[in-house]
Image (tube, rainbow, N blue to C red):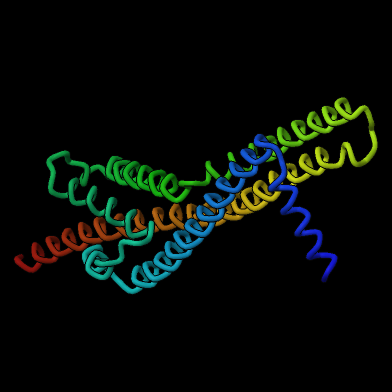
Length: 246
């Protein structure tokens, strides 16, 4: 334990006695690391809330028989992507139903119109949940090179010490090499969590996007069944009334 404490103390002393360039590099890496961890925790909270909300939405979806029932049951559930997809799809459905485009009489055109709106909403939601991932990817790619710059600078400083003292003993080169290794370690310590967080979050978002796509297909089938089953029932009612009248 004492040895570990001594090592940590020496590292802290090396940071304090390092050159201005090394200190600037370490400060940059420290700030980037803070933002990186903040982005990871924020995205974890955001995606977890979206997954929970999507699960509750699907439970409501399984219990209803009509679009209006689903709309009423999902009021107040705005914190998940499936709700956004439903609202956009329902909005487009109302536009078609109340409009004069005649899409309700053209089944392929109706499905295509709904599909385009749902696809656009899925893309918007995916883009929203992918926010800050580009920052994590950039952090994972760039910070090792920032640390490497500190490494090169520390080695240059070590050679300067050799030249000024005219000696290549360990006492002359140790400070510069230690400075170089510290910046290298700082760069890796910043990059590794960012890369792991990026890959983990991206995988979660892909699963969420897949769930959105599946729901969009189910919702289209739900609308299609509701519209054309209603038309079929209306036609059957007319036929029955015609024969009853005779």
